[in-house]
Image 1 (cartoon, rainbow, N blue to C red):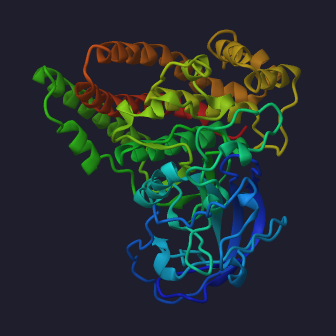
Image 2: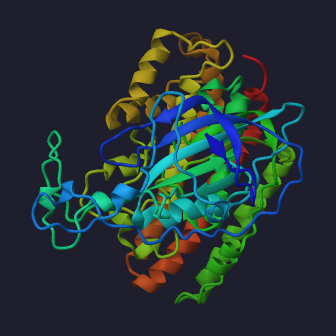
Length: 504
């Protein structure tokens, strides 16, 4: 695989696929593939970043309708003269035609600080995105490229064929006027013909940070400080105007060793813009929103300072496949969708999973997903010994958190009830890592009762507002509750720091 290093680099640098981290091959969906690669570094001068030149909404080449129902078997005139895109799906090899460097979305170069090593690592992810989501899923990593707790984005690009057309499924789909049923594959029980064809375009993202699963954390402190730094990355995304909506064990990773990054910044134009919206019916409420947000932001900054300087990042959040842009979100049809990974979805999201009613995925849902991610990582931990603790009780607990919604509810009830972190029996039956993690999991678990109740009050207030007032009210409360949830976690982290640290 050849990766371009900087602006004007037309030869690239040869990289090796060290490991296929994820390969979600599927009939319908993103079919994401994540590769760990390494490459030789050079000591040349680092180039300045350049502006993106490729618009994600660039016109796709669509297929031409034929005279009959067999039109899908025909090819566009001239296709025989164009070389095909090569996509080899072997376990160690994956190649795709790379466009000119001028079409890349540059944010930083690949020649990062690699110490004494002559090789550096990067993550390369391929995903097939729906047209309506391309802008969000390509803008998010670029806009958050340097933010604390995010994966240090190198660049993203859309591969093209010899004619400069993006690699897309559009050319195989029916055009307007053709019967969809002639193109629909009836697979399994899925016999319903969709209302419109689903076009997807291939995008490739290259990032610097190479993390490990949280289950490999060596101590409870390593796990929970990595979770905290991932939450700061999530908050940075919120401050740039995006809601992640898919917090899970695969999307929050630990950095071992930690990486030097730019410190967390909470002041952004998006916050100022949202808080400077025209006044609500009651201008006092706007001032109350501003004061509350400022209070949570100040307490978060103070707690982080007391824990220690954020000169190194211990964990980060990645993968904006399910993310939405907050602008226009509160009154859009996005509220009709349910987003997330089942094992880590919030209780309310699971409860409304099959409901035909609209459900507004909020920061509360993402914050609760962080809890389930930490709980999962503690239960499945193998970091200290290289093996998971094999006690009968912890094995049963693992089955609960990977089971149905009711089983997950039972597991969460156990954490807030019978499982006491100071109990010798709990340490023997569930393992020392999980037992020690309970010192923060228990109070964090119960904190969602108050947080959730207060959010329900907000939603009750919103029902009486028109769309314009609703958007202003929700935009401000999204930020307030995001800051509040992260602040409360860091306060717990600071409070229980001594108990979480130390070898297991």
